[in-house]
Image (cartoon, rainbow, N blue to C red):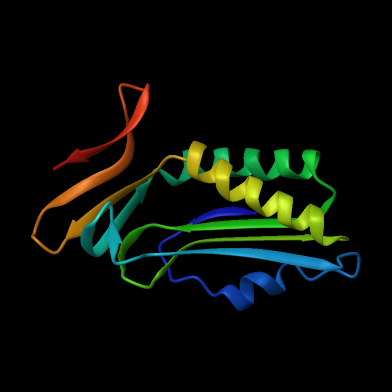
Length: 147
């Protein structure tokens, strides 16, 4: 399951969705909003996404993880909206019979999600400035775009 959420994430509830008698391991990743980026104090973030497109690409990533790794289950949820410092922005969980597959698949899912799923991040800085971070420009590279 891959989902875009406007609501706060509940890691314990998400992890329970991976419970399976065939699984001997569960690896999770939590991405939190931090108070800095590139040496600048950050006060908050706004995440935006077109959910149907983001969820379609996210589902492809989870399907690829199932093909590449011997896993039992995989979940990735990404928040959108206004988030504060410390808020949970993205959660990934992978269950497998063995820990190696769970670790490898979890890393694959978060890395591919960050690279391929169209979720845009706007940082709000302590000096009042804002910037869209790591947004593709002209389709050829990632850059910060001031607004």
